[in-house]
Length: 225
Image (tube, rainbow, N blue to C red):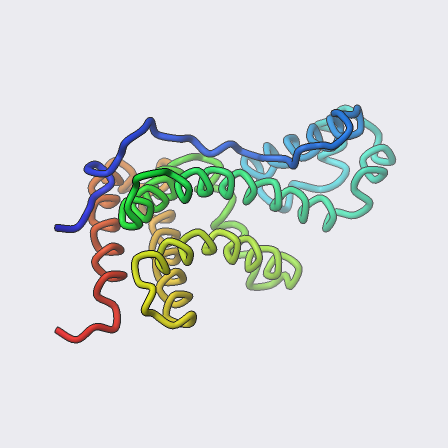
């Protein structure tokens, strides 16, 4: 019988932080605090107003600083976007790592928990607004395309790790294909069941369907009936 997230949940639900930053050796300087303030302001603008509104001048105004002070920390908009998306995906990686190292939990349960976390996060305003806009921008902006591809490659890494645990017999390419399929399937729900979308109230049911399907697919992929 396939595991469902409801059956495997053994601890409190975890909410992904908006941003996560690396530990700072030698203390937490004013410069570090300023950079994080800038990134938080940039994310607020990105969620509320969109990528086009997230100009360097707009971010500087939101931080109540001069443009020159902002460019001291982030010389270009690309530098700002690169570090912002890094802080976004790092927050997910921290939570994924918790699931991957849970003692006494089967690989199927880990897969269920990772997918459950992602599907619940889809219902947040941040995820529903930011990621579809980045997808659209990536069709026309090479820099955004590279950042989005890097972000999702990092997001698929824990899926690949747990798939290898479930199916150590699979080739690296098969593992990568399964991780890509699972990731794409979950992300596709954003436009239908994300924050304030028509089918958001059905997300718990969709989550159960998705997780059962993913576990069954990983278990049976490439095997004859």
